[in-house]
Length: 389
Image 1 (cartoon, helix red, strand yellow):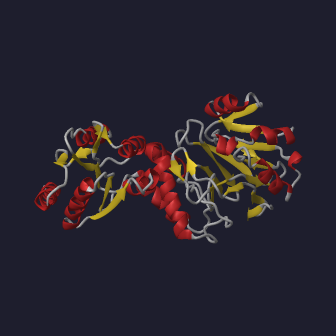
Image 2 (tube, rainbow, N blue to C red; image 1 turned 135 degrees about the horizontal axis):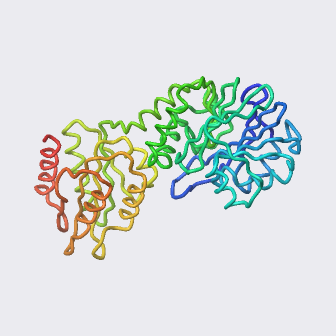
Image 3 (cartoon, helix red, strand yellow; image 1 turned 180 degrees about the vertical axis):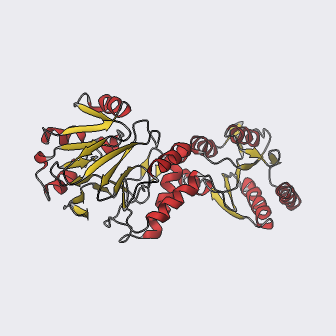
């Protein structure tokens, strides 16, 4: 395993996790990378490490360009273990290396994980001369942990952007000019929706703090490096931070005997009649994290559940819990569901979406047993009327 050159004297020395399929409940069907970067200068500098278990891979890549014992500086942009997990191991080898991190949160969090390794705190605007290159630090707290910061390398003009602009995307290609670019955008959108979205306000501040930097390369902590398409990914981030919505409407449901599913299609017909683009997700087949990526920019959300043992289906409860934690983009909603005798679930869905500060289009829609065509047509008509108000 060899290091991959990003720019002159700057290398990717991270690890590829082809088999990761879940990250905190987020389905990572494309795996991920744990990105670490090596800057060769008068002071040899390692920026971040990799997840524990991948140390040998990182170490082999470092050794392909330099003796790891010669590392002078280690920068930890973020204390989460997928970035810092091998910090103690590399510190044992690079015994004279000084470890820089955000003060005070980075010091606090790294100490909590690994004990006192002699961390040196940095704050906004602090610079670290490496020789021909200089690192400048920009705190980006709560994007998405309190300790987050980014590092900017001049004169190479490389932004080591931490979790911003990242993707859970395993690939042999390291840059946007080599990879499957449409897939990189899909994974960047999913990454933002599932990890960064709740911190949109803080992300907007981070974008503003970096707006005047003459960025030529963005090196995130996961996924590919941005070189030729920086304006595109930055503009996408600006759109997501601004909570811009499109003309899509997502319909999320589970069903027992297809009655709630029939109601979902009746609502779909209403959205189509009003010129919207509905997308249906049966929770028996679709993962929460994929739905959230579309929900992020949709104008409307409809959630349906049958009643099971006086409550909503567990799959629907799971989705609504996940949605509440990530919902940074308030929407208009419809709650619906069928039942046999109790009928509690549509009201529970209504309450859960209201708790997310979404706005109801109309009261919860409830039908018993198998809906008739007339009942389904009425649902379509009622939703169309509510949409046209």
